[in-house]
Image 1 (cartoon, rainbow, N blue to C red):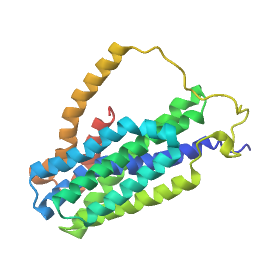
Image 2: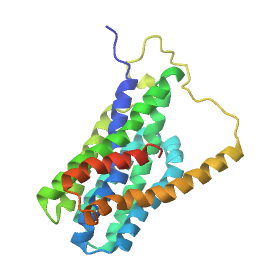
Image 3: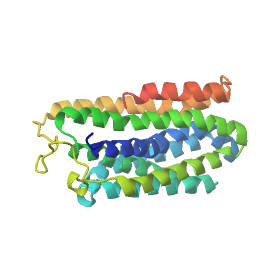
Image 4: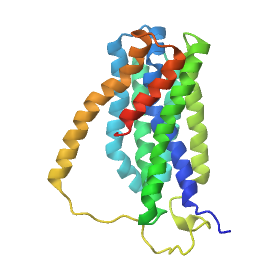
Length: 271
């Protein structure tokens, strides 16, 4: 029996990175918004600004995350981003003022972008073209896993722990994210020649599936405009829908935990 291609270890760690970095870093906040707002006595406007800070951090570091990964290596950026996200989640769990929460939400969004962009590039050097799509698809599924985990776990904790439960929830997410960062530091490899677990017939000089395409400026502009319009409407829904279920139609924690991640996952599927 041949050795398992180490690329699949990279994929497995990638799923965990996406789950914590993006799944927790971007999609846990809407689940905790109602409890946070009640505990902190914030208005929906202030909660919206916190959500906007997450999105702003995500946007800015999406632009520079690729450049940082190219210069310093994707592994370093993944680990640094996960640690940034973990520290931000922990700090959110300990904060009560609006200004510190705004800063740490921004930092959490930045960490989500850094880990998301960098981990997506790693399978490209481990798989040939015919297997790359499957590998990247599995890694991307980590975000959906994060939505499911937060949707099933957080409502239960919120129900059991009371008014300040959001603090324990953020602390737990920070702890999980930190452990994933440690796992990534141990297992992630940037190049196949850094490990002996190579696929049969792997040619060390073979380049990954990074091929050049002719640029189509018009198409890129159209995609940018469409994606901007989608994001503008989707982020409003993703941020406030859970709050609507809890405060307006009075769904139970159990029902919220089942329907929330399902509906958010439908929207995320095109994100």
